[in-house]
Image (tube, rainbow, N blue to C red; front, top):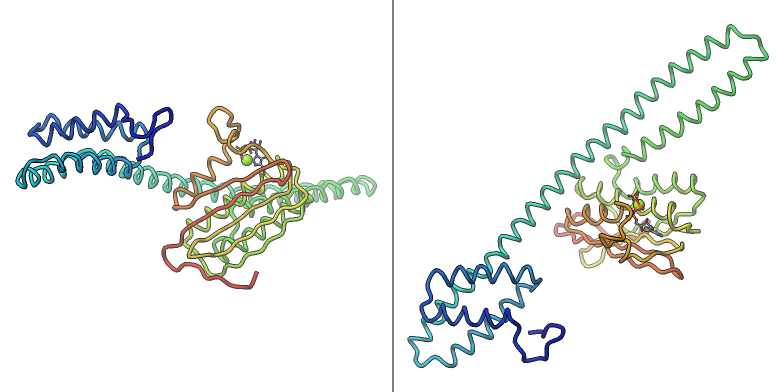
Length: 325
Ligand SMILES: Nc1ncnc2c1ncn2[C@@H]1O[C@H](COP(=O)(O)OP(=O)(O)OP(=O)(O)O)[C@@H](O)[C@H]1O
Ligand SMILES: [Mg+2]
């Protein structure tokens, strides 16, 4: 086992000493009370961030020592069976933590789905209700124009032009908020649509290369779209980049998606640390991805800008590689 920092190899930690003593005591007929201690040791191991593998290897190491010093075959058999009970008791907190983690992931997934429904609702109301209000304003202006002399009508016309622009922008935003293309054609066409809008608004070239075809389950496509959307927001808002590159490809049944900019870069570790954290974007990206079994890796420097790399294992054959981009 790895020696902890500050200890020489071979030197036992307090935890290891207590673990060995409890296992020895249980093997010598320690009973229920020692099993309770095994459970507590398992909880402490989690709190001290020991991996399950570390704990099991400690168990084996101690058991081997006890086995070698057992006087006869019958006491060795007793040791193996008592050891198994002890081990299952001290790993049970890991099992409970794992279940808790699965429940949390499930809750997170449900939360994201609810959030997505809410976004859909907002997108539709911006599109439909604001659209209808603007139609009413247009009608009102047209009526007003009829009552005005020719010279003033020109002013009304200018207001109408501005309103048309507002309407265009609102439609664009509501589509980007929840693009129908996402449901109809998938996340890559939706990302292209989004990138086109962002690129125009921010005057930022966005290069897309997607070597993936086929559809993925809706939750996964929505998550990928949201993560790319936030990455683009950040590239515009913080990076002052001259270019953004979005690439997606499949390798060894793992979907990869990289969003890279050539902007200012930042200290990714500090930005994500609880104390230094300013916004929610990066953390939300990670949580969204973790709810679907994906990971996010960030590399950033002043010299090279920022790259976000998403990795998402595809257990089922949901996607195909294709040379079409
Ligand atoms: N592409 C990037 N280039 C430079 N800095 C970045 C980039 N992405 C993130 N950052 C830095 O990391 C910080 C955290 O980003 P995050 O998206 O979590 O929050 P935010 O964008 O500040 O706020 P929010 O996303 O909640 O609106 C940012 O404030 C910014 O300093
Ligand atoms: Mg952000």
